[in-house]
Image (cartoon, rainbow, N blue to C red; front, side):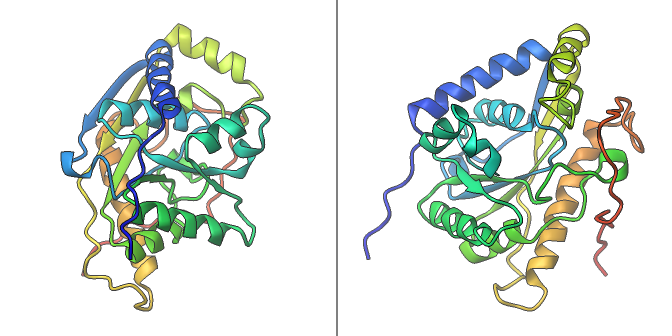
Amino acid sequence: MDTPTPWRPPLLWRAAQLLARAIVAALGRFEVTGDVPAELRRGPLILAANHISPFDPVVLAAACRARGVAPRIMATGGLFRAAVLGPLMRRAGHIRVDRGTASVHQALDMAASAVAGGSVILVYPEGRIGLAPGMWPERGKTGAARLALACGAPVIPVAQWGSHEVLPYRAPQGMLRGLARALRRRPTIRVHFGAPVTLRDLPPGTPGAARRATDRIIDAITDDLVPLRPDEPDEPRHVDPGRPVDTSRVHRRHRPA
């Protein structure tokens, strides 16, 4: 069998990451901590991030650029349907996910092929912008874990905080007001790349393995998020009145026996 040609980020995507860094720096104080091991920066690798704002893709693109990583993002299908952004997303190599449809399995297959080809994939294991009280990571979907277990690729948790102060939950509604506020107040936007999550003891196909792997990934993101919001342990200071609250997927921190 021929070895797949490793995927390399197109110039368009690398340029977009540079632009993202400039945008984030203009709108807030940007802090990136932690690192991605040099041997993993070109993949195969899965980055698993918490999802708190429509501004997250810009923040994470900038943070990944700061660490020499150019991930392919698993993004909602709505972005790919946009007149200008959609073609750009496809040309940059990102992967469309139509949540709530049967085609979501096709997205996982595409992501698995991408990881097998040496790509770095960025996923949001929560599957949506989190709506749990306090804006802590909510219980994840198992797609990211199943991808990791099937491919055997390492998973690095990525915790972020502050992007919710730039764009409101209902953006583009209120977007201009949010951007103007960010320019005036310059919120601190923090991203931390954590240590790889250990999943080797969970063989693929074992009953419950995907659920346990998902909980470990969410636990790791939560643990790394704690120091990013030290003065906001319970509730965020910035309250978005348009953000709904959903307690049905609150994540309960797993503690090993």
